[in-house]
Length: 333
Image 1 (tube, rainbow, N blue to C red):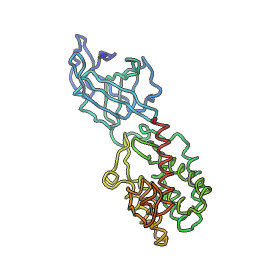
Image 2 (tube, rainbow, N blue to C red; image 1 turned 60 degrees about the horizontal axis):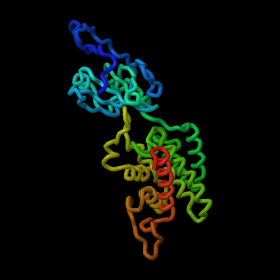
Image 3 (tube, one colour; image 1 turned 180 degrees about the vertical axis):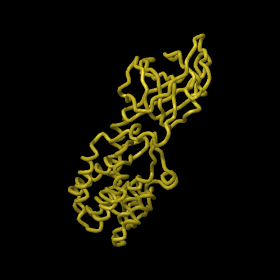
Image 4 (cartoon, one colour; image 1 turned 90 degrees about the vertical axis):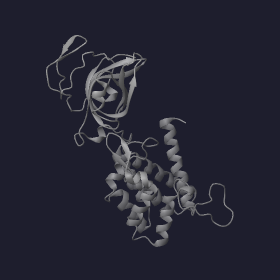
């Protein structure tokens, strides 16, 4: 196992007392890590010494071939990730932070077995509130302003006044609008970055325009409204720190139930039949078995049984199309 390039890793800056000796060389106290953001992961190159702030995406205590313990980490920011190692004062340094924390680090980048590795002299946990979470979380590739414009255009395609007003309140200009634009779609699947929910919603809404041209008998107002609010529960499904995590509501209820709650509370102006049709689309957009499945009497085509309307089936297929294609492009087949 490669040893740290900088051998003079010294006393923790929070310690007091005189200098001490490492490998027979007297060492002075370590100066504190400067808390300001440093280079991004994408800017790190071999041979570079650096100080910076990153998310600790992985933390493992391992044993080298010579029997010495070391910490194996993964540093991450919005531009990417890099493996990192701590070889000195392993237990002392490791007690300062946990996986998922935002940390300040000092070290040097080396090339080891063909890949870049950050060999760290010091690591410290950042206090909550002392950093912007967007420093560490990936963000949408596309312009949020551009996506907002598309969302507003799609919302104007809803001509049923109560449905249009509901969509306006929930995702365009209401209290949840900012959370909707910030949220990811998933933690580690498709659109797993800030703004991912907005990007996915615009994609599904755009597909709705096309499928309604091909199938004019579809209720285009219902299908478009369902497309634009189908994942609204995700505004309450996640928490944001150094990593995207599930909220207690997200873990226990999931975004389908959360979305139904949000829509139901905001749908006072909708006629009861319209409200139920919209909720059915939202609750079954992961498949009829995920929502209140209902087998209708009579013959049904393969793959349609359990859906209460053609619009619910269409939303399920269009949502799956965008999610699966995006996942394949980002993560491979």
